[in-house]
Image (tube, rainbow, N blue to C red):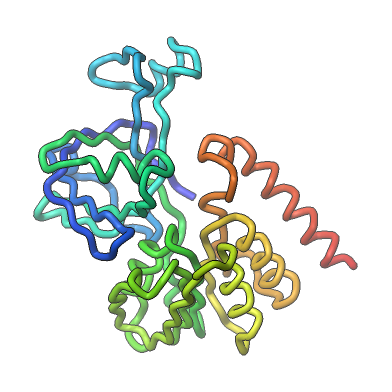
Length: 277
């Protein structure tokens, strides 16, 4: 994974859209977007910066200085979001934020934004783009992974076969997902089921010819289950699989990021044990 040094980019809101009831589409602009290195990866992301109330930061804001001079309780909080689109000529960067009322940090913040409001972020980072030499592509995720899936579909080679499974809360959250590829898209409506339950069942039911390049991202519980399924049961090589828990039920973002490295090590140990067995 590549990630830009923790340089803070200052932008402002140009306009706001609502492509579905639970998605807020932020279009950001500003002189500092010029030359932003976006475009190499389909899962390119930025991290919005949220100052801690009452904390005093240097101007211009500098994360390295803040982390050197202030206690960790005063460090700005960061929330990662995929870049949905970047128009370098117009100087506009688009990010979709999932909104569920007053829940969480970024959703209520995005809902309160208005054109002209300042927005700061660090990044971009990223790691995945659909391989041009794959026999077929598998893209799996919940709402948090939908922007990256949308960008990946736009970048598929013409006619490339792709199976896409996206779990959302209900039919109102479906979006157009254009692609030059030969795409078989299934929307899975969660209703009252746990996040990811429908995705795991759908992946288990797939025919699985060789030559896949897979992207599986979203809530950590179902990602863990699918990682074992793909790596151990289906034998997908690690280098042909982009898989990560973007978030975890019952844990805030800071808690999830603090525990994610241990979580990954546990999964790798389980995979090694299963393979040896």
